Length: 126
Image 1 (cartoon, rainbow, N blue to C red):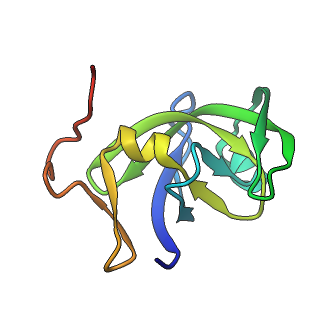
Image 2: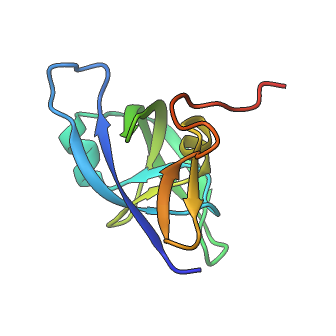
C-alpha cells in the first residue's frame, strides 16, 4: 500500500478566538499519536505540558515535547488529543483515527469516515 495523506483542521480549544489551521498530514496506522511540527505548535499557541519518550522507525528512543489540548476536525468528525512535537511533517496516528471512527481506504489511498457509520462516530466501550 502507498502513502496516505489527509487534510485535517487543528485548533486550540483553550483559545476559541484563535483561527484554526489546516494541515496536510501523513496518515499512519502504524503510529499511535498525533505528531505536529514546532511551527504548528507555535501557530496554535500550545505550551509544552511534559516530555514523552517515543520510539522512532529506526528503533531509537527520543524525548519530545508533549502539547495540548488540540481539537482535530476531519469531515464531520472531531476529537480532542495531545500531540508530540517533532519532525517537519504532521502525522495522524491511530488514537485520533479511532476516536473519530476513521478508516484508511486501501484501494484509493484515502482517509474516510467509517462507511458503516457515516453520520455518527462509533467505537468500542467494553
